[in-house]
Length: 247
Ligand code: MG
Image (cartoon, rainbow, N blue to C red):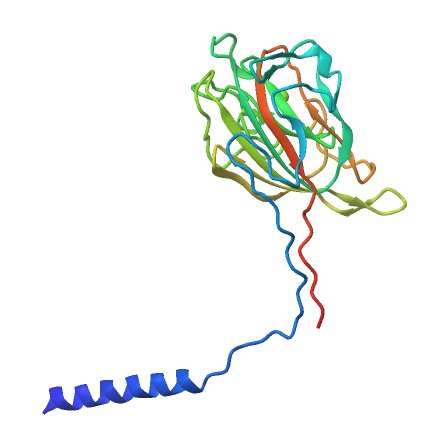
């Protein structure tokens, strides 16, 4: 009897659920959205169709001092000084691939050091951090002297690695004071290592981080720190704005 009652109760609840579902109305926001632009997403070797290609293996014409770096077999090797883009970027998504030298030399900050300086002043560190101790806020993927990566996702010397960086540029008032800080999200070899981290300012080796007013768009800089770090497949996307709908 008790089993029968329980079965009847179960059937009633189910029926009620089905009835409620039948009479529910679809939620409509009332917002009319513009159509998201259609792009080609690219693959392991090619950039998305709406990206600014900064290095596709052929030349470094998009860079100032690019002639200093050696290009061979589609790979650019850091040499003789840093390079920076002719074009400035503000909010952006950056993709690049790098390999620290296969022949291991030096230790700590002296092994496979380079860096991605967003706007020429906010560095995501490149370093051989595979079995190579250094200070944690200076290891590979660190926001230099501000935030260590959540995990060390480094591959070994000579192996290709990737950074996918999502950057929100800082905003300044007309008097030069800070209006909104910069934010960084970084994926290293497919692994999230920074999730919307607020920057405290520029990343200096010798000074505490602080902001100083700068233009809305500034060149991207790749560091030469004396080590022949290799690069390939570098591109930037500037479309970081959410679609805006109308009610
Ligand atoms: Mg560096």
